[in-house]
Amino acid sequence: ELVRDLTTRLAVARGGAGDVPAQGLRAELTQVRSDLDRLRVIAGRTDALEARLEKAQEVARMGFLDWDLATDDIFLSDEMLRIFGFAAGQNQQTLASTKARVHPDDLEKAAASLQRGVEGIAPHSLDHRMLRADGTVIWVHAEGERIEGKDGNPSRFLGTLVDITQHKRDEEERQQVFERITDGFVALDKDWIFTYVNPKAGQLLGRQPEDLVGKHLWTEFPEGIGQPFEAAYRRAMA
Image (cartoon, rainbow, N blue to C red):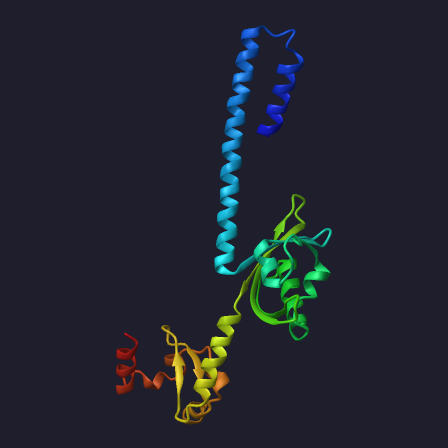
């Protein structure tokens, strides 16, 4: 808006010089110069903000995408290009080229989650594998949601991707360590939710390990409340 206003006023100041008193023309040009200085400051701040946002994405290994639902054109941020292994400058992609990067074994669930997000049923949120341009496999956490257009129909879909490959590797190594433990072993989070139960613990507790993961310890085993091991558990958790 400021640029359009400046353009109009410059045209008037230059083209109408014969009809404008010199003092008024000087005043108009002075104001135009002042507004141009303001515009340069705003542009500088915008460039600095974009640079900081780009740096933040790089540090967090978080990429951003903007999907035009009408054309299926997708804009990828520079960090998204690095995650995918695309060359610099290939920010403009299509839905087809982006989906081609999803690991074939995860494509069905990724597409289903994405479709629910586009339809507004639920936000898109999923961990899945992707193929970089060089063929290597990475893990990402994807999130996104649709943005409503002026007519009430979804016009865009904004999403993020975070490279969680190292986290997945650490998780797999921890799982391998847990599985080598021959005694009964469980892991709980700070809210007393089972995060891991090895086969021996499942046997001792009379439950399948996968049935306990994600469940609350004291809800699943209320008979343990008030017993000596509850006090020991709470001391360990404190």
